[in-house]
Length: 239
Ligand code: GLN
Image 1 (cartoon, rainbow, N blue to C red):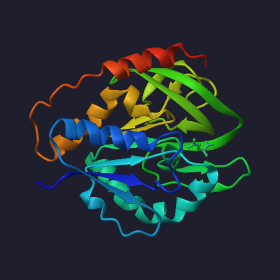
Image 2: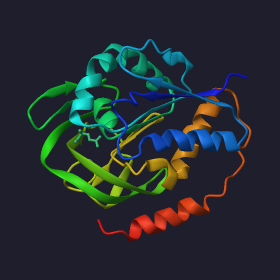
Image 3: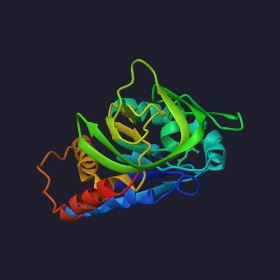
Image 4: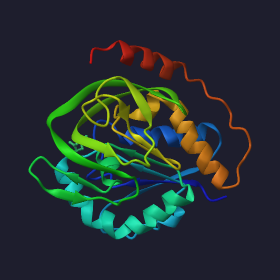
């Protein structure tokens, strides 16, 4: 059988605060359950066949990194939108979360046009929003992570947030909601990386990918004791 393929979007420019760890978690959890995994890096200018992707992952980046990938992202936006609309699972963190929306305007006033897959738009705020953050999500329960962004993200009326902020800033400085959950796309500001401390989200992405490949067997439960301990410690850390 063809391996389960994870496409990592723009790792050269968009991979901050350990975001590549999300891909590693997906790979390990799939392998522990007996699935072969293939990781494909996609960087600007490469002719990656996106139809091979079972899961797409994107990380955070400096404003300069976001500018560097903009042209390539726009040239592949229609393909990515079709895949997202078809239900392909994707995890987009921070800088890539912003660029899956309509646009991100940087502090210097430069407007970076996004792929327009998510019904959101982002403008840089006056202060960076940095610190440990906890959310409560209807789908995923408690989510623990770390945010570091200047962008303030406005959700359009038809957007569903990923969760309600328990502690932290979230999408904008009012601290009410964080991230977006659109179809099977999870988009969030949470670094850390996100998945080691939130295996329930990793398994959502994995289960969705496997189902799309016709694998409906119940997946072996994994021992998440360390993840649980990491969550407890992260929640005790000062903001
Ligand atoms: N450059 C963007 C911002 O500051 C994204 C930052 C990030 O990915 N950490 O909002």
